[in-house]
Length: 303
Image (spheres, rainbow, N blue to C red):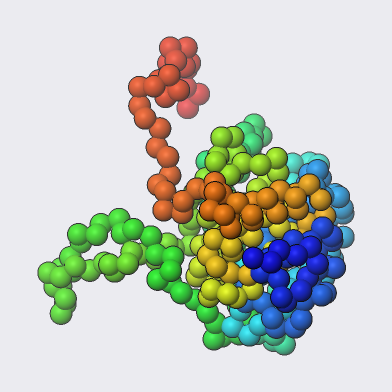
């Protein structure tokens, strides 16, 4: 496998240490099947420079415009975001804020929003002045009305596989698809926190199963996947594990180094990642962690 540090269509994987616009401008028009990314939320994290919200939107506009340019007809763009939180604790849902940057290209480039996917997880900051945030969103856009979508590649186990039709011409026959059901637009799997098997030093890391589901559904083997804000390379790992080509960038050299190591581990088959079909963990009862302490029981309800 050819892993390059500069973009070339000959590379199987390209991992660039740079501003994402420098990478995107080197990629030819209409050459990418899927752009999938999670941009910074303008929160002042270690990997970003906090800006005025208006400046942040202008930068996102430039990046989104380039992503639309490099996406081929029938290709997809998936933008995964959460909320921006200002100094007063007011939230701005970034998917709502950024959606208009895509619709600007609706007429000229046939950009269509196909799904607003909600990703739910259980771990995160515990808030005291509002309800704790436990979801983020993925905006899935296509370029054109004829687009790639392989539902069978991402079906999940049926909840009631023995269910039978109770009326109509199929009455009495099994009604579920043997390959599984459509996962829907509410996705429930863990975020990368604590002792998650994929945890690196990145504070806001993609779980591999998120890009993997989208890559399997929206691309074919050998096609090019691009992540402009690749972080520690979870999208790269997902692309390599599913036989796709990949190109991504990050401004932090230490994250690019981690990405390179994870890609090499993926190639050699030793990468650690949570299997996409693993059920969400349900704690066992009557353990030290799940037993209710006595002083909890003495607390009076405020209802």
